[in-house]
Every structure is written in C-alpha cells, then in structure tokens.
Amino acid sequence: MGNNKLTRQYVLSPAAGKRLIARALLHIPSILEALASRTVVIAAGTTNGYVAEEFLNRIGQAAGFSKKRFFRGITLPPGYKVKDSGRLEDESQFPGDVVIVNGKWEKGKTIFDVVGNLEKGDIIIKGANAVNLDSKQAAIYIGHPSGGTICSALQAVVGRRVELYIPVGLEKRIYGNINEIAVKLNSPGAAGPRYMPVSGNIVTELEAVKIITGADAELVAAGGVCGAEGSCWVAATGNEEELDKADELMKSVIAEPNFVI
Image (cartoon, rainbow, N blue to C red; front, side):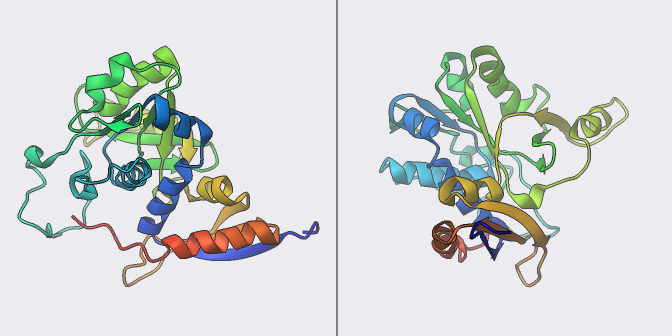
C-alpha cells in the first residue's frame, strides 16, 4: 500500500456499532452548532436511543431518559419475552422523540410538534431499516397510513433545507436497488409495511470510524454466534496515529451490551 499505511481489523456487535455511530455524530460541526444554539430532533428508534443518550449526556440532561421504549416500531425474534411488565402495544410508555432547542431538552415533545418551525441550520436525526452501501441510499419501513415520522421530516428537509442525518448500522445493509424495491413493496398487490427510499447524510460504522479517527474503514466480513449474530468485521486503514485512535475507540464501545427491552 505504501505511504506508511497500516490496516487493523475489529469486530463490532450491532449494539457496539450503534454506540460508535452515536458518538461519531457528536464530532460533526453542524450538529454541535445546532445542539448548542438551534434545534435538534432525534426521532425515536433503537439506534437513535444511543444517539439520544450521547447527546443528552453532552448537554448534561440525561436524567430521566431511557432507550428501552424509544421506538415506534421494532423487529423481535419469535417468542421474545419483554423484560419488564410493560407491553409493547402500550403507547402510554412511549416517551416522545428527543427535541433539543438551544441546548435544552424539551421533554415529551415529538417531531410533529416542532417540524413546522424547523429552519435551515436545524437538524433531524432519523434511523433507517435498510442501507445500500454502494449507492449511499437508505430506506425506512412505513407502518402509518400518513407516512409516519419520515414523511413529516421531509417537509422540513425538502421544503426548508433542514439537514437530515441517517444513523444506520451495517447489519441493515442490503444489495438490491432501493427504488425498485420500493415500487414492489408499495404496489397495490403487496402486503406488509410500506417502504420509503430516503437520501440524507448516512452514517454507518464505516463513516463513524472516518469521522472520529480519520482512518478509512471497510466491511470485510460478518456474522457470529452465541450473541454475536449480526456482528461485522471492519478493517480500518490509515497511519499509525489514526489507527491508535481507532484502537482506543473500539475499546470504548466493544463491550456494549446487547439491546434489551
């Protein structure tokens, strides 16, 4: 490879990947500016639960937040038992999205409460259900007949140039044409959730490594057993200083426990 470039490999569970992505977002200047003096909307989702934790910790307002019910829809294995007495169908446990205005968490608000007032310079963070790494395009499952949070968000993104960030883990990678898949899944003859292709600033574990360390990262292998299912092997390439940063970064997230509810 030359130029003193080195390569090191790391394995990341989906939970570790979510934590890594969340921390990377706090290295993006436009997000830091909005977190301090504009509006940041973190739409509920499992990956965004980690994002909300990191952001609220940054502004010293994490008390009272839990990512356990911070989602509107979720995929679970057959027979999964919820860890506490709450039921997933009980919407009274939904805490709202995380809306931060001028550095203050406005508890209980949702994206629907604030989307009409968002302007250029504000930030929306919305997770995804699929990502094509080659085409740099994501897709979101839609369960609501009005299009859910993403259709609400796009009013501000397309209409007023509000910046959209899409944190999405590598375990959600697909290789099909997302636009063609959308045509099929949204057709009158299809059943199940609908499918919305979305363009925005996609941040996977690969982008996260680059943002934080400067090293280039690529997906080189995947899989595992005994709780490592969905894990990804990531190879980072850079100079020694960049890879030393990557070593420390991976040590800080590698033991992240699996997500439970």
